[in-house]
Image (cartoon, rainbow, N blue to C red):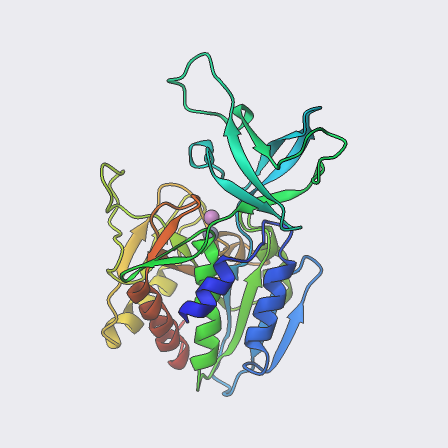
Length: 331
Ligand code: CO
Ligand code: ZN
């Protein structure tokens, strides 16, 4: 599974440019489900058909896209100015290396500022792709870049860019592979454009009409020096979302998740997140409403070039999903 996580995190896929991911995921799930479909926005869906009349239609969602930068202007000396694709923190950008779809690398530079105490804004930054001037610049307005960092392991911790949410994508793929028996129809949905406003999940949920939905995504932690207090730590098991900025998880889904975890002795945590949301927020309000929840993988340094998760949380997340899918859904 680590090889898969490496492949997924090192791939290029900012919001709206998920083709490379779609190709990788499609190859990974081929033969592991009953059929694969794709919609107009680019969501990729692998469906395991229901094996029993008592089965429900369960949508699982993980987003393929990652945060990035989009070129808005190139000056006469060939330096590119950028706008954010998703939640970019300028602090995390300075000195970073980025990569465009063509493979062209770039360095993010910081302009001289009068007030050096002020945190840098995105407008203080530029991308240097090694061009001499605007005419010979190998990138153009509208091109998107992602952070360029290799995957690395530090003991049980895995570090990579785009762990948000390629770790969720990896968990869904692994769950599909190991799902031997389920009474349910399971709609493994690899969504697009989550980071720019949960857009892919919106059309996917409309199309799939799930009866229950669970997103698999990352959440931040409260276990690093002087961070805002939060009852989630790395290595203590998957977090069952209770609430975030975009949704209040359906208590029946929370109960389904926590009781499946308890029955299988899977360590888990409860999550209340102050900022951010997931695909589950939009699936929940799709059509006439869908009971929805979220399984969150604890992740430090979210939306930075070096997002960190713990392998045991990843393993336990797969186990929890399998436990949930193998039993009946009682609501
Ligand atoms: Co994110
Ligand atoms: Zn995410």
